[in-house]
Image 1 (cartoon, one colour):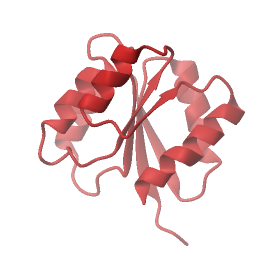
Image 2 (cartoon, helix red, strand yellow):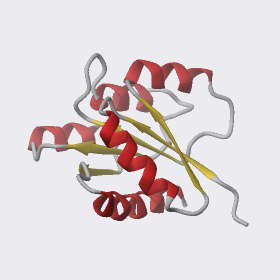
Image 3 (cartoon, one colour):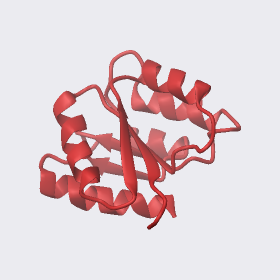
Length: 130
């Protein structure tokens, strides 16, 4: 059996966290760990020992720390800058895309609105874990 890999998801919306949790539960060998805000996630990441997550998913629009803020902080840290980070958004803002690419996001997705969409996105995301 393949060793379980950790994926982290940061999103302030409980419904979005639930749908992503269900989509990852349908995948073999992956465990999704969710955080409700950037502060909570950054505290976890700074205390975390190995192994690191194979992928981080950030919602762009969150209070206090936006996904872009978290991405910028992660990419400035030598221990975490190599982690693949994907961004979720509800808009098609060219400025969001530009900022995410500027700070090293590997992908930007429109946030899935259904379980079926979430499974499709999750299957694309886990490719960054290899």
